[in-house]
Length: 401
Image: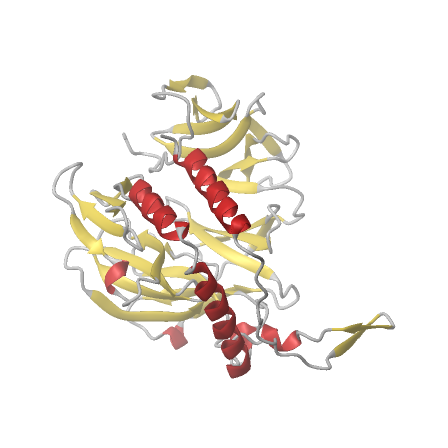
């Protein structure tokens, strides 16, 4: 049976049960208030609940605890709640696998046995083979709320940088683990937010983005002044090299990627949830090279795909809302070359694997995967087992699988 209709039916039945219960008045706990008033363009605007913005204050914590107690005490009285919970638990109790990827001759994939709070990361030399546990986040906290936020492996498959977050926080702590031994190195990076890790070609360090160490008040403040750093393995975080910052644009967020040839650092710049972005880059072969502003208008979405020397490939909706593949030669940045034109279907994502563009389209609410060579010439389709949504297609340009 499809779980979604069943879930809806259970909720409907639960609502029916509740509807039969007599109306109950709740004695809600009073929320922290103040006389806060701000003036905007000459107009006074009252903000009495400003104290609730301080999520770490004792007053706010007590209010949250009281609200939760009122809510869960009431929910515990609903007879059908237990049966709904049991049924949904049974439906969700099945093995779940993430799409495998390969790095340095090893395969990596995530697996959840069914009801684990967090999926476990495995690695092995072959598939299916006999993989071993590389990292189990469920063992890192008693309540299972420590989450693995990201991983990045060195090209030789010997080291893994990984991020952890506690209890749903955006703040991350990044560490480095030896993949063969499972031992963590001493490297430990804090105050990381909205960032992954991008290893250099040599595997001696990686790029990442973070904020300055906040004060107690700043832990709950807005996210301003993101900075891009390079961390050299075996050195303290205080010695990390500042690669790029923009104090004149305090809300810019930096995400970095090192090209497969190791020649360039691609800097993706976003603002909030706006899908439009900017693309800057830095030549890593020249230690003193400046950061170059390649696409600085924030006029469209640009997804970096890969490069052939100075020619960069992008998936973009510039000039076509359903997206296309373009190329830009950094020697002639004003010229945009169309590689794969916009199709009737929306181009959801693109990967460069095995000297081909793997283009994942959305056709009538299901995936359609087409292949193109690097000049844009059609090279067939990947047959799918049926209607559905396909994800993954990870790999390197020279990979054969």
